[in-house]
View 1: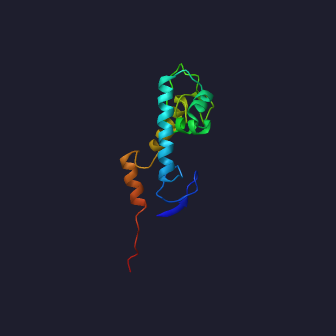
View 2 (view 1 turned 30 degrees about the vertical axis):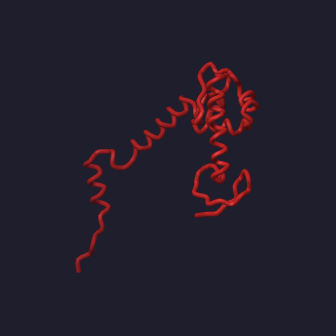
View 3 (view 1 turned 120 degrees about the horizontal axis):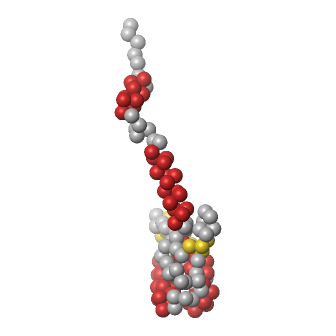
Length: 138
């Protein structure tokens, strides 16, 4: 295990891993804040990012991080939206819009389609025969 200083309070703690570099106590406080923000959004679905930040005493960057992690999701009538990391279109949760997700999935699928072993079995057998190690007889 690795010993680190908490990013928030500065105390030493055993770092186990993860995106947050916080001690267990600060992590618990952050999780409590998340629950507070989540309840506030459920009670006030039309509030904007600034209102949520002020009412719950949480930074807008932290709210955006929870949105990118898909821990917070907003309805279509909500004024809150963050930019897709690829095209910049306004989205309500996650990192990418539906169009960019679909495009990435198609590109990934086409990469697997062109992989070795997908083609004609006879051609694959011929390639394996050519690639075999040969020995000279004495």
